Image 1 (cartoon, rainbow, N blue to C red):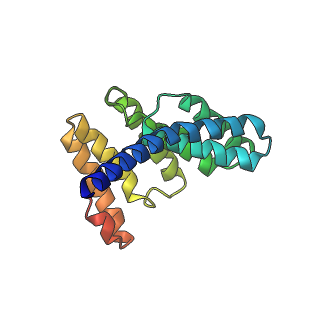
Image 2 (cartoon, rainbow, N blue to C red):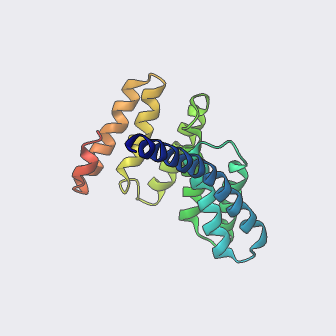
Image 3 (tube, rainbow, N blue to C red):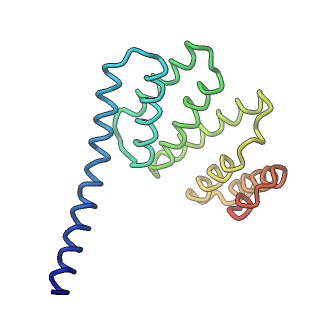
Amino acid sequence: LMLKYLKFISIFCFLKVAIFNGQTYNNLDLYEDRLKKTHQVNSKIRLLEKIIDISIQQKYKNDIQNYIGSLSSIYLSISDSSNYYKTRYYSKAMYHSNFPLEVPLALRNYSEYVDYLKTKNKETENGYLYVDIGNLYTSIGLNESAIKQYKVAEKIFHIQKLNNGLTTV
């Protein structure tokens, strides 16, 4: 009886994992279908953000560049420059950092996003941004550059009294 119960649990867990893995694709398809049907700006923004997030997390090589471009254009059309730059550069950087051959593109996009933040005096708002940049430098063997980024992150975490952030640098 115990053996049958363990077999049942094993099969159940296997099926649950298989369904969950397929569900991501189905959800992505669902979001893409909804995107095609909606005309409301706020709905488009939410759907595009969700599609981009799923694509980055799951490392999909879908039409993410087009989605990032579309979302950036919407933000630009409603004069939301902060989200425009975040989407245009930060999202692209996050996406490219998933693929080793695209690390230089990720670094360029991160750099452009940091440059924008500096023009708004907001470069000290997100220490994790600099940790991400440092990790990319480390992944391509530029350890001195990585250390510089980690020091910037550490300074920001001290300023903001974010002890959790300090454990990452």
